[in-house]
Length: 260
Image (cartoon, rainbow, N blue to C red; front, top):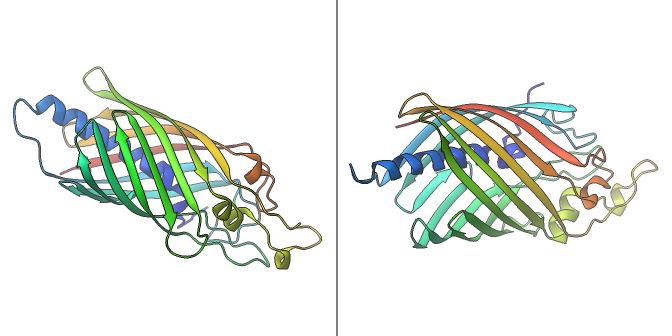
């Protein structure tokens, strides 16, 4: 069961890279009185995700399986306030390590190629965010002209060491999506309805989520990661004829990263 749908695992990849980024930051914080922190960073890695598929009759690249195995390349490069990776391109414009504002542009969306339906594709989203201590808020808008929707994310993340070699990152948050986003990815148009697929126009919705990622630091360069990601499925999504009525989306992730 192979799939190339990397974007379906966007949030999982972000969790892995956020974990690794926090790991780097924690390491640099320990070293800041010994050597000056680097102005650039580069990390390479590889991950595998096992995830339940909430979509029904999805013809997109193997996405019709009830359980999906996904290979996730983990690459992130940063220079000063600029960072490029699975989270897209992020540029901080004000602040420090405790509070900062930033711009972000990335690809997002849930691809769905339903039989007899117009293809729903991912799109470019651009917006701004604010980080305050362990809190992060980001609001972006579809600038690719597909859904024309807006998405907003708010989360609280904590990174902490457990002994000398083991680290863990916990995160809870919520994602909210506008009616245009919701209708594009989970709606069914009048022209797409059939005797077994009713017309459907969902409203805006919010989905809570949580993740826990423990990891093992092999050495200063290499870390082994594992974890679980959970996301609640609201009725606006679960009632869609394009989904299987699941109330929870879950994933188990394994990965390894190496920093230069």
